[in-house]
Length: 197
Ligand SMILES: Nc1nc2c(ncn2[C@@H]2O[C@H](COP(=O)(O)OP(=O)(O)OP(=O)(O)O)[C@@H](O)[C@H]2O)c(=O)[nH]1
Ligand SMILES: [Zn+2]
Image (cartoon, rainbow, N blue to C red; front, side):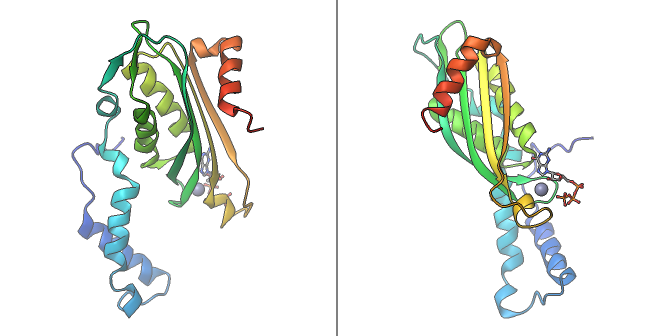
């Protein structure tokens, strides 16, 4: 069963105790000078890395504006820092988010697209889920008639350990509604890649 994180702040004391145990497990001395404050620092950092567990898409997207725009809106190169849920090491890169507003022409603020990416990135994640969650939230909470989300990241679990292939990038996409139409999708991809390649 999925944990309910909605009311749950990071348990600092528990996180600190766990980090102390990890340091002992790797053969370190958690009481040596340089490490004395490390459990508390890591616990605070984890609070930041996973702050998205305590946020909700409905809140991020609660405000819309009536600007009567029914064409595509696309924000490109939103920086992504997330944590792979398999190894708890980072994956990072960029997200591109585009949508066609609801029929009534109401739009969300541009920054909210980046906030949405940030909210889902700051959770234990896999890149595929991050991508689909952003797309689905825009359909559900903004009533978008079409959505395209492309995420391109390097996973440190593939770079600094395991298969050790630094520089390899994983690209995932989620396409919804009118953007499934080949012509509209091609227009979105052209805007999205915007002369970069
Ligand atoms: N689909 C998907 N896989 C991911 C993501 N992040 C990491 N992984 C993969 O998760 C898999 C976990 O595989 P396991 O065999 O259980 O773990 P492992 O022995 O540490 O695997 P290796 O990384 O191959 O050494 C690895 O293939 C990772 O590359 C992601 O965002 N999406
Ligand atoms: Zn991983």
